[in-house]
Amino acid sequence: MSSHASLDLSRSSVELTADICNIDSVSGNEQTLADAIEAALTGLPHLEIIRNGNALVAKTNLGREQRVVIAGHIDTVPVNNNLPVRWSEDEGAEWLWGRGTVDMKAGVAVAVKLAAELTEPAYDITWIWYDNEEVASELNGLGRLAAVSPELLQADFAILGEPSNSTVEGGCNGTLRVEVRTHGVRAHSARAWKGENAIHKLAPALAALAAYSPATVTVDGLDYREGLSAVGVSGGVAGNVIPDEAVLTVNYRFAPDKTVAQALAHVEEVFAGFEVVVTDSAEGARPGLTAALAQDFVAAVGAEPMPKYGWTDVARFSALGIPAVNFGPGDPSLAHTDDERVLTSQILECERALRSWLSK
Image (cartoon, rainbow, N blue to C red; front, side):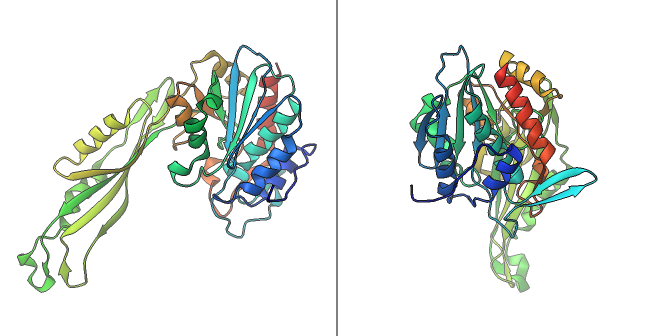
């Protein structure tokens, strides 16, 4: 191994979260953490260890009737003076602050600890820790595993450790990003009537967005809020030139009852008459709560499931026909923020629920 860091799996899941967060693993720099997890688990007789780049798989092969995948990414967005971690207390609640505490090293810590300690789980388990989730989709370590070793992802149920306040968040919305383009004719701004202003031509598109009322769609008992939002606008040549081209970038977050094709048809209807070009898309995932395994897990967690509004890698499992949910410590609204922090009680609750369910 070319990097050196060690993890003591006898420490509590809260302490282990701090240790894992303090191993810097910004996307593209995951090797040190991947090496540390591999070293901590290698040699345990109940686990088969498989390494693919900076993605690590640890499997039990106990001949159980059902298999569960529990996965989480080990990379973070860039650090911004928020490592090493620090602790605080607020009205009796203990917080752990720092990059990755929410997204999603607390979930990683719980999984690593349980992978080592659960030698006789009720189901065969495939534990997966993977790289490059926070960057371009083509670099995603889970996607790479699905492409080169799809058998490693096969299971009856999957849990992704994305932050969910240690309650179950089912499925995820899909996402579609398009460019709404307009064209005009350049002219000197002193003689604007000689040209056609492409920026002005965006006005009806912006009006359509301002008047748009996003839907809330119920899918398998969960209410998914949609959103259609302008996320960028560009145009202009110089301070004295009428622009001949303008682009409005729009992101549609759509409920998992729709395919990407259906989402695009809706967006094209909203912007009828405009040139609409797709630049990025990803299917959503249905909640995954109808499977018996999922219902048993929800019972072990003991809280009402919620929808996941943001896109997550549960969609990769859904695409393979595997029901999947999000479950991990941390408030998703604090992910990626400079004051990223997690309640230590949520880390312990996540560990309790998973340990209880996997040990029954």
